[in-house]
Length: 531
Ligand code: ADP
Image 1: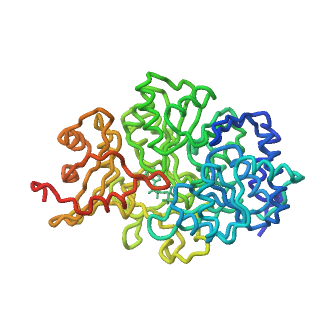
Image 2: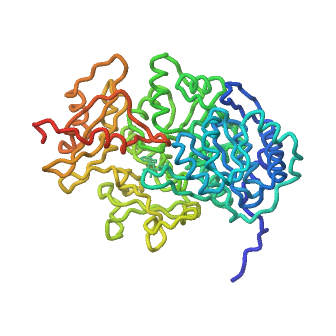
Image 3: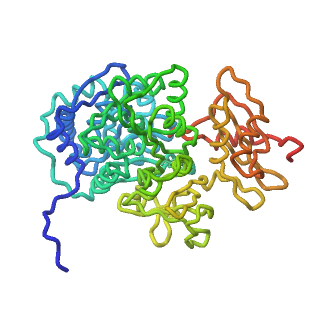
């Protein structure tokens, strides 16, 4: 083999913050913490304080490979932790504060965290669980305690030269089935996925942007956007705990936000607020939506009324972003309705994550947009295994990650997530997509949010029950919803019953908690006409 004659420079996260500090030092990073105080800093200061945190961690005996936990909101200290912890070769373990005490204890112990940084909002919880977490020597508040922790330390002079395969981050899946599973990303995989995220087909993030991070930094590394913002040298706004629609719109308009990313629920709220308040978001050009399926009505409103392009992406903890919603050259030239149909799908393969769909025997299904199968993924930033856990069924024998999603792919490579395998409704041997039914229901005037679960049915095995939350002060008839849904899905998919509830329960990662709904409606009898 003739080896390439390039320099041996490892792909390290520290190179991102180094770059941002050097070339975009004066570019703003705006942060609001749980104390409601707004801090205006910049990449130069973030870089400097990250080195100071790194120095403090080294002085506290944190070494390469040691896990350091964070339980925090999106703010400047959490951003410094992203860089300070990983920069010395320690492992940033982001912890989702919305999990139960028992789950947090489980993952802190499983990770064997040495130090955990905790936002004051969660101080009580930390005090409660601390006695059950023997590996943690210090719980440090993300407040003045953090300030004094770093104040006493010498800033690290420069970042150490690590092996790019060193573990950089640890993030647990939410464990809807069994215990949470730990996904460990290396420096190399983070730099590569960040690059992909910055490309035109990714989020097209560049130095001219002002980014509002509405994806929590405790989940899937904030979709790698805290890293992408540094790689691009973009302005970054970290909004803290308050993601209410009013506040989001406030940030967009005061900080000239051009790009933002978040789960559909956040944007549904923003749109509703804009319509009610008669407000506008003139600077906002694009948003990325994912984490669960975004209804087409959301894209229609955002684009037609507010000029905001929606990139619908699919991903998971095991790989961060796995698809991209940019229009191809051909789709750019299609009628708007045709474009929107594709936008409502879950994007196309983003270079770096190979996707394929297989049937029960592992054979590829045709790319016809109709034939469903299990979605598999592989690539340099897809998890090859889990942290200290044997999971014999998580990968195929030839090494592809089994995503647990049922999907179709069309001839152009557009992905449609039919359902999670465990949520799809199996009626008379055929599959009904709970996602499609939910999206159709949300398109009905007056329906705010919808969730569909499968319940046992004598004749068909399983049939759909639609749970709806209606806008305040509105009365919506069951028949109205059925008529609307019937215009969008096959007739035999129509829910056998519709119930109105006050609130749809969500999991710690903001997804509809179908387990809870299934428990709640376990004894729900079908109306006679449909039983
Ligand atoms: P968890 O920790 O529960 O795995 P993730 O955020 O990793 O949480 O969830 C990944 C899952 O979210 C995917 O497997 C898929 O089911 C769902 N998902 C993500 N993006 C989309 C999307 N655009 N459309 C439909 N489902 C999505």
